[in-house]
Image (cartoon, rainbow, N blue to C red; front, side, top):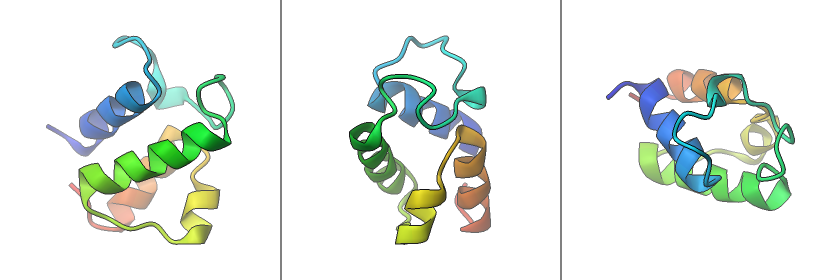
Length: 78
């Protein structure tokens, strides 16, 4: 499974979205589920799935699915 597919699954499961939801274009606060509490749950789930640790600036900067992909790619996640 690709990084994008794994991340997509994390977004869908953490935010309890329909399986066909378009998370690839999702941005912070686009949906009710991605509020500040949802954001922290999402960050924790991503860290668990990819065995990474985000610093405070990365947590704050994670403003979209695409940004999360870029961060994970930079960190060497697969």
